Image (cartoon, rainbow, N blue to C red; front, side, top):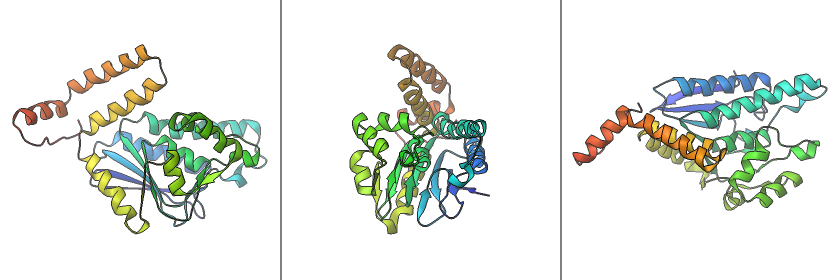
Length: 257
């Protein structure tokens, strides 16, 4: 198995584990899809963290050795599956955190960009989209997600030059949200993951979908999406509990349903 999934306190830990660099092939992409589907379907899972089981790499992108000499039809299918894997992350109504503590290059960064939050460890590693160095463009959503996250000209510069950044510069650019000391990185990530998982995860998920789907639509369509999600939430057990807790002046105990 190239991907392991365990659950701690309602948090799914999706660990990339394909030595030596977590470079993905078709099999690993399908395992990622299966893991995201498990997160989507399992009511015991309230949030997911994607991390690496390897010490030096989060993910180095596609396994180039499996692509060399590939037929166009095979490569097109590979791209389709790659897109499906990250699109599932963005369209799953649960939060995903990318926990980055090693080189995060090409498709590796594109997996992280599909997540809702990117937390990075201090360290001597790089983040970037280097596909141009192979004569290719980012092909796992990078050309679309990076310019939606940071300034267009900055995103374009990083993609056309293949420049990579250390964690602190990635933080300054807005690519990652937080950088934590290496020795406390796992604890810092899990503390924040557990706190979010203990909250109204159903509302969090629908907020995520309203934002992601709304950004792909016009304002009126986005508002319609927001209304639809709000109506679904109003019928949930969590809203009943939230309103009751508010009136009783006590902390709410959200169940995620």
